Length: 236
Image (cartoon, rainbow, N blue to C red; front, side, top):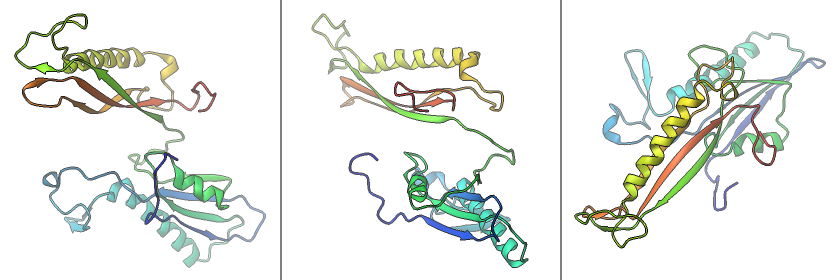
């Protein structure tokens, strides 16, 4: 885990519907945390106050993925209520930390919640998704030379400002070129996935003052990879 990260107030939940024995087990799992909701003005309702409207439930995380978690719970409740005979166990888990490192899932495994197979009820437009992209987050720091906005930009070797915004623009153009190449690169595609690997720019920050050229820029990326790909440590 990243240094300084805390999971206080972010509980996992696990339970087991026991089978009679001798059969294989299955885990139903899903995450119950969400990323920040963004600007409140973009919401028609309070994102953290569930509202039923026109037959739809509105609120942060209702689709991704409280809806799937509710389906998991109902499935277990129906099986138990109908006394359906089960040879294997049904393991039910809800976890936190979906986006950063999956520490919630690892914590459940560490506590003995394991199964022969698993179903994660993420929203997939009712399509079975046997695999997904992995992600690596990255930060690209672009150093320029700050200076008054009305000064003529010069190169690094001269005394004038070097606009970090323009340098960031070149990097963004390069990412676009790389993504177009990956569209047709068999190493970045998988027959069971609609889209190839891509590098997604998720945040851009630059500049210190409206009247100054930016002396530094920052580009945050979400880089995707396939299960068959490995990093320098041979980890997937």
